[in-house]
Length: 302
Image 1: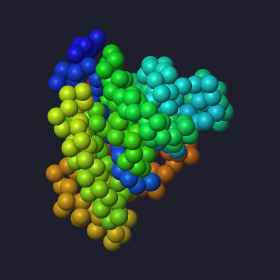
Image 2: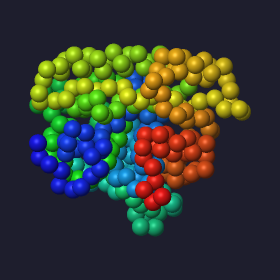
Image 3: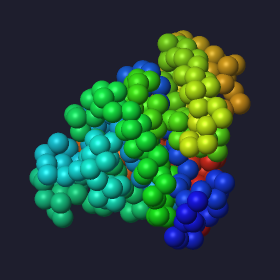
Image 4: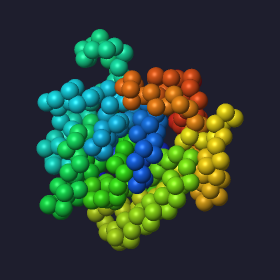
């Protein structure tokens, strides 16, 4: 295997591979807080000195918007679909993450950069990703090719998936091994908790299909579970309490520190700004910092 071209903490290069840790935010549920968690954790790590890339693989482009790029800003630029078709490299597609500080579209005056973070932007064309792979099975290797040719110093690839288990998610998830993490981010709702079982079944299917193959790791593993909108003293609905209890009973060994409920969490899409920057002292921002500390991403400036 080609050695990495830069010096990186070995914990971010499992088995001495050349690509970073992979964190996959996936669950077959729309509005489950995948994008909020992916961007909040990525930004928190970046602000603490850990470089990373957010891959927005969902055609609704929520992570792309939060990290500073709307459809107009992406005109003429490459997006995730170009990676899938092999028409561009990662460095040609990934854009410097940023957040809105003004009302216009001037990249200098109306946006501020987020250091140590890039975003692979999505586009409406990603809605056809499954069909593109169905038409040409060789496209199953698109993500693997990105990993094998990687030479950077990122610590984590944060993957924001659509709410489905189609061919495109499969082509990516089969490149994970047990050192990487499948991280469903779900609301404290009994319906969401029940959906985790379907995800674990899908991961087992992927492992079974790739067992014994040498060309791909094929071992995606649910190592962590994020529960968002968790009960607080002022938001203590019965459904949220039941969901929290069910998550503790079924997935206690992989549960991360809770992300408590806050109505402010919805503002990041309106303001085109990630939560840890938009509202750094809000309850969920504090909790996402606790999560990243729990995962070993301490502030390198301390």
